[in-house]
View 1 (tube, rainbow, N blue to C red):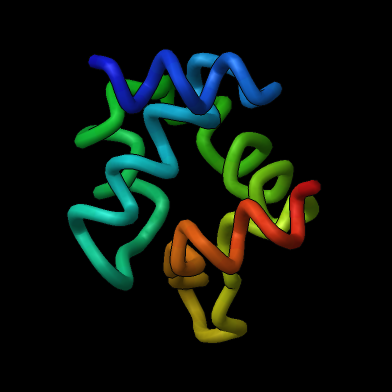
View 2: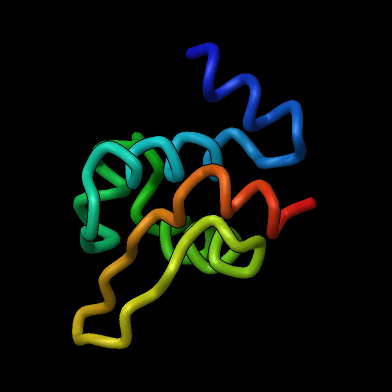
Length: 81
């Protein structure tokens, strides 16, 4: 819970923080699996993942279905700030 709070303190939403932490744990995954693990509603997970990609926390693979991968935290934080 501490990590999620820190991510929210730097400007991520609760869903973004939970999604990023899930991706760090899961590795490369599909949106459905990430959403279940992060407890983010299916209708919001793609928006959350695209937002994280825009902020530099997530890389999107152009496969079908799309797969997502967390960017290393040190790199992601450098890109974000």
